[in-house]
Length: 256
Image (cartoon, rainbow, N blue to C red; front, side, top):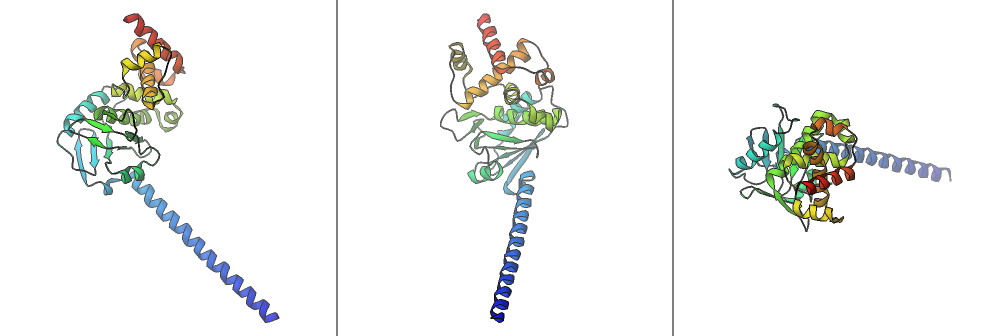
């Protein structure tokens, strides 16, 4: 009886040791994989075979890069450098991910969008592009095409905001100000401005994200152009989106 008890105890101890070893192995594996993913998030270059540099833009792609990229980036540069937030030393690494797996790997939260700016890493990951046609695509059913130079300018402006404001203040920005200023610098919207104004004047809305982004840009335009505020003042002042948007629509109606 005593021998049976001793054997039972030894087996239990051995099983615990095995489970402990497996647990430590699993923890180490998770840490290694997490570290590799974090390293890839900061330095995705190894999974992009092609690269070129044009002015402040460092372009990396999983497809050959046509020469028309210079024309696209000339339009982008005109918009980005027009912002008072731009400084001569600013650089923008941009990764063009045509393959869905690259987008899901590097941009898991918004792989279907036109692109995303990762202010922690300084990188921007974009969806599919047609560089000769100056077009960027997303994976939505509606409003799924936009001028590529506007998309790049929009995402680069996120980096400008984070660099000039600091990460904490950037993260505390109201969403409409953050996206609205980026749209303002980009100089356009996916949703037609004329159609958007018709809806707003009629007190109606469209449920597409593209419409919301248009309203953010129009509200921002009211403060920067109609009221003549500087970007820093606009960003730092507490403002209401609906009031700003209504003021824009009223001003536009009076001018027509």
